[in-house]
Image (cartoon, rainbow, N blue to C red; front, side, top):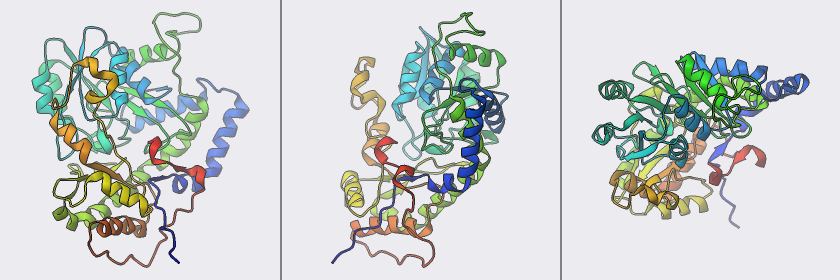
Length: 406
């Protein structure tokens, strides 16, 4: 009789939530007692604390990360007639946010070793209409602040960071969100700092941008029933802010655990580089906060990426692909005029990348089980697991996020 494989979930939030559940419950109950569900005290406190954690004076909570990009660009004065440079290799929310601002998106390719925006290609794409660049700090690794600032200063561009996957990431003395005029964050539940639903924030160093955002998110009203902007309803719920405020003090520790787990993967996967399994390059060491741990399944591998993913699923290892179709090839955006071959690095990566399980609390045994499963599928001998730690996820079903939601 054969036993079922031990399942390693792609994301498991139990390690984060269980130790502080009483604190979270108390924070929620406080909001319920006060009844300030919209633009309440917990939101104001969290906005300030998160902005300060980014090294920035102002934070404005909104309903989601996509709204953070769209409203943030508007508040920075970006709109119709302006061109905004962004990478083709990003989640579609980046593109949608740019388009909702009224600006024209201009894609550029990515660097194959990191999957980050190619700033040389970005410079080549600049025209007299270019007003802004949206660097995406993808998978938890920041784009070089030094090179971004050089580019922006040379061509008088607004830097608007997409930091949805890079909470408290650091590079070259900068923290994510502190490089440009403003930055967008997402608090989707699986993010490094996640809410119990959707949520987002814009952080900015400019008071006028903050004031404009507070109006735009609240029907364009700087004060009640007085509408000076064509705004919308996009406010971070006070209940969600209370949850996030409770979790924020633990974020640095959780990020450190993510980085430690990634280094374990790097060490154990190193022998497999000869088999065509190549982790994306970490250029910033401990400043990488590893929202995702991504490997490339290259042509040198004996299995194609999809076959490897299917085999891992059969062995109980949940994985993801971030992202299987580049933005410029998505059916909804064909009118932008791009096609196959426009951005070869982004297109190649979309066929190679595979995201492995990574979340705070993932055990050494579970990491080794993931690596051993890959070795088994490649016809290699697996290593013995360490004798300590338990690879089994003890989280209830409600605490595990299915990969299809990420």
